[in-house]
Length: 177
Length: 177
Image (cartoon, rainbow over the protein chains, first blue to last red):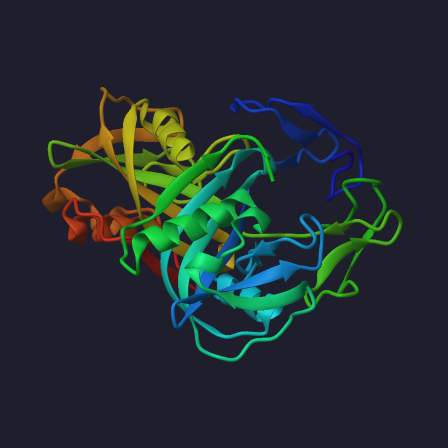
């Protein structure tokens, strides 16, 4: 961040009065530009014991497999966001279940929230995907999963065996993906 | 948003190629300025069956009571954020428990995440609070709770009676508070 999005003047980094964090501050109009982690929402769509994965057609991790997930949009709920991502990446409709995993991706400034889901439609390859397939647990391509957060979600999903055991929380301190 | 935070030129709102949402786009440097919901993290600190609430010394909802909660900061986990907010608002240390409530505050562009917590220290009035007190369930000032999300969290907290029943999810479409 170099310029104020409100007035276009240069911003400076300092600790505002009454604060204890460095912020980008505009000394022209006074606006403090807070920066916060962003929510990523996804789901693990299941049908007949198999899981729907998407092979990424975009960077990062082009060509690797992932559960449907992406940045939450303004105006939607976390559950609606997870369903929308599935629609976009796999042209599939899901019935969202319960929230079961949350990964703090500290260095990326993101929190990843994962739901269980039932696949309730056909599927096909969305524009952000190279391929979309159903995998049995034994066939999950663990070494080709795009992100640590998605791998964590898949592992916990299988451990839960359909039960709602609350939210498994995991902290990623280094961006290893 | 009026100006590009990267180059200082005016931004325009349009749907970028390959996208289906209106975005603020800089036609000078090409940067797309995505806007996403922000996570708010909080907890319900309990000690001897009583809940720690803070009376707000800041707007919005000056003078109303709330569980400790606030915007998550970069570099921290959701659990660490909830503990930090408790430290700031109530000068208190907590042992964070499990995630039990998530409220989509759609019109504010926020998701509110609440943990159970054990109060493990003394407490006093933080700079953002007018007062901090422990309340038994019967004494919770329900009509003076600052936000719908916090009221929802408190209600679900008492309903759970200490059990981890997973995450209660609630969607707020209109900013009523």
